View (spheres, helix red, strand yellow):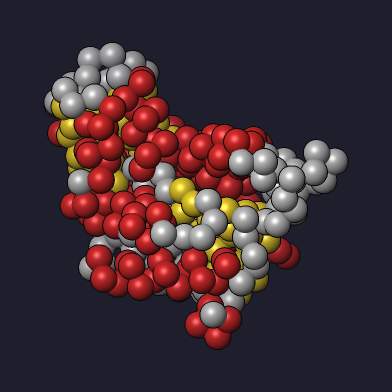
Length: 271
Ligand code: DGL
């Protein structure tokens, strides 16, 4: 048993898709969330900048003595994978659990990946998929605009602009006949209803936040690190820029008003 919190971070609010699943799967766990809203997006930046930001984000979470670091950002998971592997506590990104789920789900061996530019350029999802099954055909599409649309909270299923952007990004994946699509950026599960409708109900969407949360649960249980069964998990949310959008979108996503628990932090002063 271990009563320390789990540390979760993302460039913005996308990582809340992981928190949503963590709260459901691990109700006894305390969670510290950091959304780097002052520097989002990460996915259009250089690998060097992403690595610098990731190291700072992780250092901030480590000040809480977190027992596990959960990288709820596809960009950091794929670009900064070596950094995550070197941490002194258990840590995970989204790439491995999502690729494992996609490899198991595909029937026709054709998998689409939607991610940020940095994630797609890293080729990390392709490598993970091919580790499971070298014959999988991958169609990977960088969808940078979708991050901004989610951050702006344009996630309503009938939003015309978001529908048009999703339709355009999906086109090569659907043309390749993919029966499974990895939402390889944690912002994208928030667009799942739109993506599912446009892709068709026969296409399986892999929710990276959910797959990551399942993996976190498995790691904590396997290593005897879960909290007391009678403990009711608490959740704290930190952002590096106090944006109104964050609390509004977070409230809608998590199904609870977190505005009074959403704290501004200048992480450079804390690490
Ligand atoms: N949620 C992040 C990811 O999974 C968003 C990317 C960004 O900040 O550009 O990649």
